[in-house]
Length: 97
Image 1 (tube, rainbow, N blue to C red):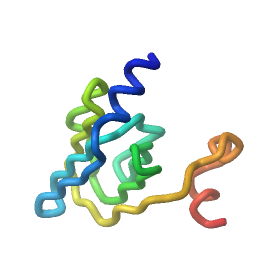
Image 2 (cartoon, one colour):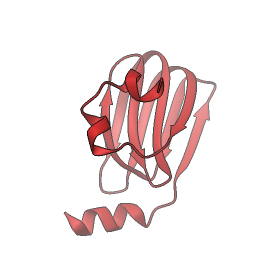
Image 3 (cartoon, rainbow, N blue to C red):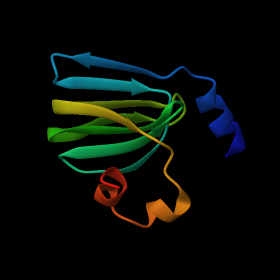
Image 4 (cartoon, rainbow, N blue to C red):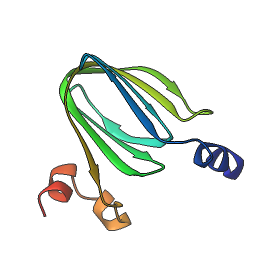
């Protein structure tokens, strides 16, 4: 598992958004949680929250650290590192401290 983490850490983090309908994120370490309105993922550059409507995970490449999402993207937000105790709380509690 350590080799997998090292491999992902070697990839650059990037975001490609096409017409607010198709999103590709590179350098993703893991997806913490997601639903049709929000994705929370850990990237090489911190935690990324994607908000929108009808969001759907299209492709997850754990070897390359790539994630493809389709839907209407309304916001992309980076948050500070999530502490272990914060993971026990809901995402709204972390966002609205």
